[in-house]
Amino acid sequence: MAVATRGRIDKRKAILEGAFTVFARQGYAQACVQEIADEAGVAKPTVYNHLQDKATLFRHAVGAAAEQALRERTAALDPLAAPGDDLGATLRDVGHHLLVLYGDERSCALRRLLYAEVTHFPEVLDIANESGAHRLTESLADRLARLALAGRLRAGDPASAAEQFLALLVGPMEARSRMGTRPVGDDELRAVADAATDTFLRAWGTGTA
Image (cartoon, rainbow, N blue to C red):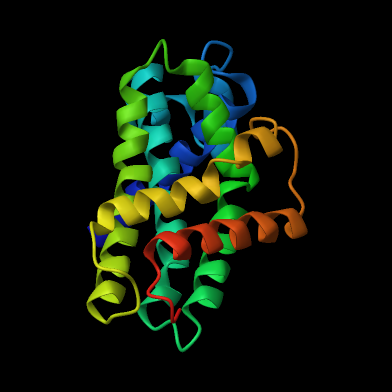
């Protein structure tokens, strides 16, 4: 039974991965279930056995992609749990890591897909937000709150601090990347992370960071 369950989970994962790849490449309207089945390496009826129709498949594929991005970005916050003596350097490194993840091909494909299909599937914006930006902000706020309690940051609303730090990082990137169509070099990413950190610490630092 455990083997059968594992196999079903693996097939579902493969289908969602294949669906995201096809939707990102073709767009929702042009994508077909047979192409998704081929990409996933399963038979077309297997796709329908797991997800009943193309619209349901699209919603779940977007949700799965957003969840994966969230796991990677939340892991990038780990150094803030023990930032060492130089909090500014740690924030710069975390910011740079987040920008690398924000600009990778999969993340750009997810944003382009949301931009293209949000009028037809307005609910996917909520799905992506609850599985992505909103929860990342919560995770960062928790880490910043702990730093404030330790006297490393100024006391205040950690949710606002988290929103502001992420906005300072992500805000410049749409124009710099031309909405995800232009790769942004690592030196440029580091410059954005450095500027974001400097501005953030002017607002939230204690003067000793």
